[in-house]
Image (spheres, rainbow, N blue to C red):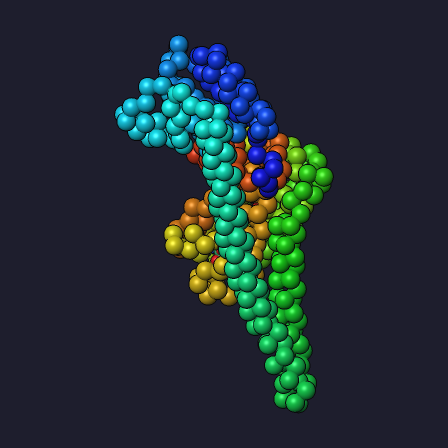
Length: 415
Ligand code: ADP
């Protein structure tokens, strides 16, 4: 933070009279100020647009224009700058105009060196106050943001505790039943099976929470881990693993690899995106449904699409989809177990590569998740923070190619 001592002490005197310029220098320099001068509007304009001064003494009538025209560029560069108008033609209209434009004070010619020093000291005091006010506002904003973050953190902790309590309570009641002798030898295996399921649920939740925390914390490590990755190869590996699940549900599984992009990224992140999206598609699509996965490129981006003919997501639920722990009523009713963290992880990864993800879905008909990643991402900033790549990726949501017969097309499942 800038302290009072760090406020610039150089004063710019803009006046066409040589005597006024040297007079100001003689009065101000012994008081510790550095003084620079300009004799016309053009020279002054060049100075004020290239450098900050602590205070500006501006004559109104200059040979090539009005000194008042300097106020706007000065304040645009430094809102805390102080402009004092020095004029021999003081009129009410001119004073109103100068104040309207942001001038702080006036000095009518002729004036004594004491009057000049008093005006400059007052101006510098005003400047110090303005700096303090600005810092106070900045601090208030930071405080507000910290309070919001604190609130989000507390809510997250509450949700984590809530989500962990259910499986722990279930395991505890099974164990109590076993200890109290209520579970017969015949029922023991299935009861322990249920205990194991709930424990697995907890482990999944803990694994997702750890992953999410890692992603949120260590953005700077991403760059170190990024290396050229063959996205088609990663996608094929993920689909080979998940194919069995689709097969068990008698779902058709189409994989279209239209291009073979190489992306600079962390391999585990790319795997996580595909694994979460494809396993959700399988999970939330009933027996006999259709899953279609597509990879393609568009100039310097890659586009991934995961489509299903499953339970779908209502428009209202689509707003909350990427929030931690969100699970739709339909998803809960489907009986599929989930942590509600998979899509948050996907969003976090996509954002950190300045990508974008969106969903289109109709309840009862199916969903389509589309994500776009730049092939050479600059790590550390999300798409929301970067102008160009955001614009490019937004447009590309409307430009996804359809599968072509010239490209590799694998149909897995329903064989
Ligand atoms: P979960 O572990 O519950 O699957 P996710 O974060 O992966 O958690 O997904 C959050 C929620 O988004 C799911 O519970 C479900 O309600 C919805 N969802 C995600 N993918 C799909 C899909 N393909 N079809 C329907 N709903 C989905």
